[in-house]
Picture 1 (tube, rainbow, N blue to C red):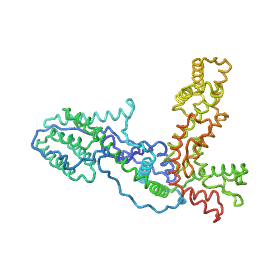
Picture 2 (cartoon, rainbow, N blue to C red):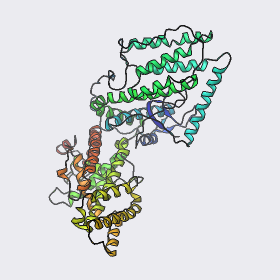
Picture 3 (cartoon, rainbow, N blue to C red):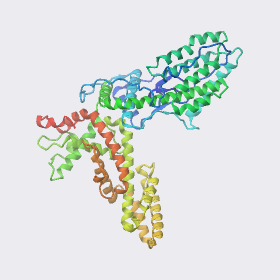
Picture 4 (cartoon, rainbow, N blue to C red):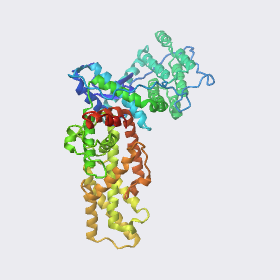
Length: 582
């Protein structure tokens, strides 16, 4: 069974609104164990969260009728201002809710796995979808809903186009009949009315009343029965109302609708533009709610996460293993550093249990920070991502990819600098050109394809070096020196390459400052050899730090509870007190 979680209120391809797609269509699926569903659902929303609202609804149509006087007067501009989603309308958002009490850090799972019914499964996926969207709004300032655009030759697009064509052809046949059949057209007018009302804010009572009066569906049905339905008058009112409600960016599209004469095409375009207007209003609402969500996101996410743990009867096994590994690494590093307190337990023994009470306990903050830094070296497919970081997995993997690319770029520049000397590297624009070439050839590649990319990079670097040497009037490199430069650049593909390891260590050291409690960093802390990528590093560091700080705030109580068990087999009051917070 495949589940595809989409945002609440996403438009379905054939009309209406839905929160889930796939696995439905009236079919039943066998119930799944709660423990298995817990991991499956968390993984379903892990990674890149795609916010979509379908902009191609297969609904719409129009009828042709004979006229009669009708009250379709537009609201006067001075009576009430329509809610244009351009920042001019009054923001409507939920009122601030009281802060929740601190939730229990961790609760044990229920004994035997119970069965999760299909309705419970869909309800849980719905809750995860809402939690994920709220999390994305808080962390992604550029987050907005976008229309679904299928590839022109894709199966999805062919199915959509076929259904749409059948729908509109059917409507055209109904309206061309003698006498016309307005059944489908009336249903579409009802949907248009609901769409217009959905664009209003709560305070627009007068405009709401005017729409209700002008699009009185009972009266429209009676007129259709008596063959007195005035479709042109209705569409004129609809277009005028849309012009008042749309954002300025949609003004031109609404005006273009007024030139359409074919009723079927007109209604089809009305629905297309209405979907865009609803998208604008949703994105405007998201921007309006962002400050409120930022103030309450920590309490909200922690509460919802605890509710999901209880509903799914699951535990944080992957998170525990992630922190246990970090604790082992911190203990091993401390035992090898004389200035710091040593821990006698070996990493292997620590990974199987807690630190012995006779040893110095690693700092919980240092263990958690080590765990966060390990995310930059995560190997996909070999181990499960911590449950507390599922919603940020795609975001952190993108940071990891950027760090890997910056490591290669800095290593290539360092190797080239050592071979070419300060004269060549001091040439105006030389470093920028090498950096641009390397970045372009690495764009979109996974670390498994770096060896192939570095072969091309070595050729391009050598060409740029030769060109610059010629421009400066310097002697060209010998064949041996050219081969040496290309060989050293290609060897960077090896993870154990000395230059690459040094650069990677320096980058990680710089980024670790962004996840400190203060979370501040500046160019003065930039290690040597990273000047050429300083702007990119600052940007990546800020993104990495914002994700980690939010995660630390939300899941701090869970981490504290886990680390107490990992670091303290037998609670000791003087040590236990230092693990309550980060």
